[in-house]
Image (cartoon, rainbow, N blue to C red; front, side):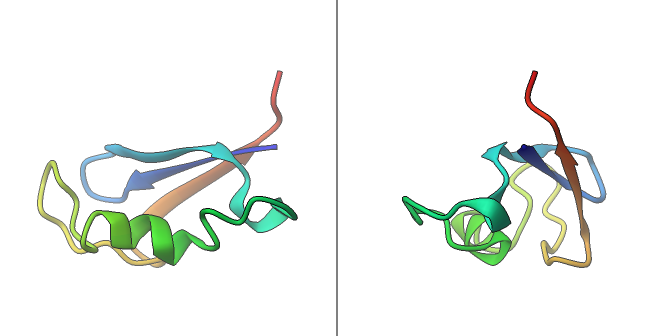
Length: 63
């Protein structure tokens, strides 16, 4: 399964990769909060505040 995290305001793609919650090994990215922290909890494109409530998360199957 893959996961994408987008800014809820401008739709900038912030993360794309394996679903974070299902990663049982190589916990380099332990949570969505860590991903948002890489950006200082602000969208680099529009400056909107990033939180679990303000971002869009899509989880889908890998093809």
